[in-house]
Length: 237
Image (cartoon, rainbow, N blue to C red; front, side, top):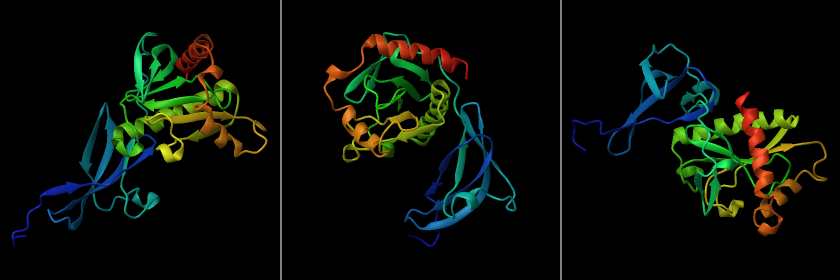
């Protein structure tokens, strides 16, 4: 590279935290050869409407980096507002399957939560990104943040609805992890005392449940009844 080294690219590393309010991030730069030229300033990052704003703050301001790790930076995003629910006859792509609008009981900007035909435990529901995405690694930061913030909100609601204080949250990210539907999704399963003789049995049930014949699935009427009840409940949260 010539003596008059020029900046040809900029980068910033981000850890998305499930929280709200302003936090601090640090932005860095590197040259065209990939050499790290170090951080060049601190920024306050806050959510304003649907965009992120940055403002330079003094060097003496303490960064949240100290909390989460030496080499990571932070952008904090709040849960996006709930959006109007789809029409019953709307169709959403879910990997090699489709989800009908009547099954969805919560929708955010990038994600939806819906009931499923075969549950490992009562109240077992799924949260998926609206965009067809096979792996978590393929998701954009704002989509990933929205997915897990929505999952957290749905978990809280399902625990309240079912009167429990524990949940199993699972993501089978790729076929070798047990993923049968080629679309990112989060399993939310309210847990109860002694719902399995051995706690690890829940993983075996999860791995085989969606691979069983459709003959054992719930009817549309049963699923819609649950979805309708959850729609009303989540409106009150």
